[in-house]
Length: 411
Image (cartoon, helix red, strand yellow):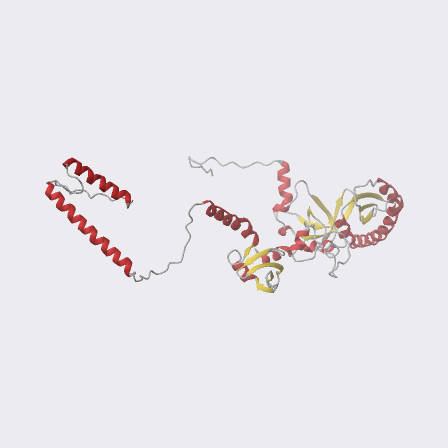
């Protein structure tokens, strides 16, 4: 039967894969996760013709001999995104009782040889700390790891340890945490080390994580047997940060409606904040939810007032000082009319009567002269006394001289 496509759809053709892609796809369809060291990295291998489940012991061949491991992830428990790139190893066989016995014997041998290797390293270089010694199933190949404060040359270890152990030795330098994970032991909590019991990767640890959990920044209190910061500091730091939220940090100064205060401590587990007021010296404990609700409105950081509000007040004061008139609110008082003095009231009445009389005279004079417009009233001079009398006398003399009559009278 032939299927035909619609005109607007392209013809579908089968996708051809290369030989490597076909083999790779077949391998990835059936892959299991195997661990060779407790709390060590997981190696992905192809089971081949074996149907393996979680907990089965298998033997895998490596470049330095055969290694015994156990299945920790079945084929249906593996996520495709976690698979490594490149070819994977194939399970050689299922481990037998003899393989398990040889593996246990090599573990005991490696524990004894680790002390001998440390003694040999101490005689040559005191900085070297042997971390682990691991043998293969045959016991002919061994891998030795050590740590040191700095990078050092370790070819002498391969030669001397190979002669002493009568095996092919491969030496690798690792860090302090890897040495603690390989050696094992117990930490300050009384339990086995996390790195040697269940952790497969080392998280990034910083001193800030200890501060976020209200722990003292004392290296002897927050360091593990490896000399580094405790790995468990990263387990609960996110929970502490979520509980703390946006609360002020210890040592910060805040302003409240009753005065300024300093944050003494913040208890994230009990959700309490202790404040000490500057004026009274009183120490008050406030619920974190209450302080969080008022933070930014009633309770504010002291830096907010110093950096934002104070410049605004300074600018307002400068503008008021530079202005000629400043409009400022004043209290308004009610006006209560008071009784006017009798003398002032009499003067006002007399002045009003004279003004009315002068207006009447001006109106009569305008009527006699025939002018439509009333004659303007002469404005009196501000000066009085002799100057005004002199002007009046001169005017009178002029009129008398013109008429020929003397001032004393006479025809």
